[in-house]
Length: 479
Image (cartoon, rainbow, N blue to C red; front, side, top):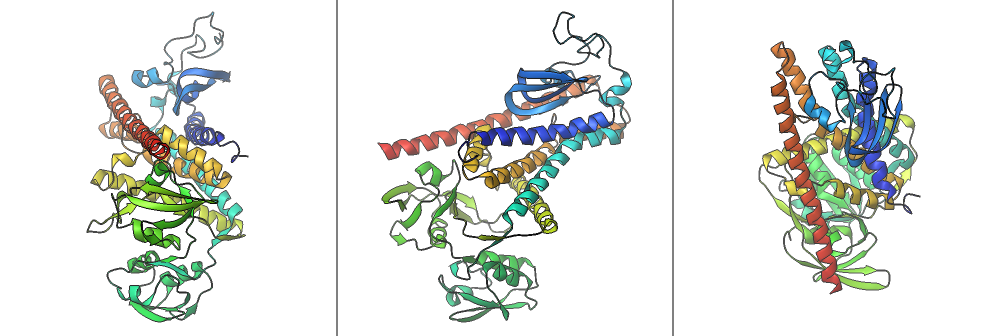
């Protein structure tokens, strides 16, 4: 159904990720008897509202997040974003007025012991981290279900598609060529590429011997599971058909008009016989226009694509940049059923892998190894959600899990207004021994609002720039 109704993708992604985050705050607040008069998905004017018990549930017009309004003694700045505070009651002639309710829905003042500030530090911290915790839990659950449904992915090939020999093992390039079939690794017979990867990492000897249909080569691989073993995994790429898999919206391939399912015939004068050939041509061509010849059904087309320049490996001491066009290989794996325990283990591992990925990007952003231009906003997420929905539920919910992790990590940044900034403020007050002045808190909140506003402007500019680039690419193909 999702592939036929892709517009549902953004609604599912935005709605579920934000809802789960705010639900975490709400449950924790309720557990510690903090008065929470409003639970809102979105900001601004209410499109729909309904009060159950002492909480009003709102669906608002601006889908830029959500909030749980908690009773507070001194947060006028946040209250202005969250529909007002609890110091004033609705007018008696308002349809929502309830003479038995606490403010703002009724005339009764909120008891002091039900404000957020009245709770001990440990309870406040639990309330503040509950949102990101729920996002991580959501990601683990989603990835576990995906692993259970998809099973274990097996790449049933032993044919080499590309060789990128590391500097410490140049002999790989001369001993192994695309099209060779790997027979064994350090004496261990292999039947699939999964077996090859596992053997490359776990082979016990420090010298790793790779045997193909044409001969053998030995390299100094170091200790099992060490850095060199991981580099070996990246040095030998399996054979994939020369067919475009996922095409990333807003990247050079998408802007030029490449589509998922297109067959790659040639780049400039180089024939593309497998997906590794594409990498071999694109990687050294950052910023250089390339002429892609593709086959789409019975039609042959030519596209001009200029690869972006990206840092090859941020961990390397020497910066090396490579070209990227934003296209992945088509999925040719088969899937084997797995048990629930293994699915949970895979879901757990993939979730924390995504945490490391987001954290690594933020680290690169701070160090200057990544650019603010790489960040996307609501439009980019909407586009990605629609594209993922076209690919089916698994792709869409995989994106949802990643964005849930992304929201969790971003919310822990020590920026005022975000959960991380509030945690810093509350811990600092505890160390100080008394609350900061109301003026200090208001200034703190204003700095946070300014930071979030600037970030929003940047990501929206990036989104518009990508849309403009896509439009120009389309116009250049039409005219």
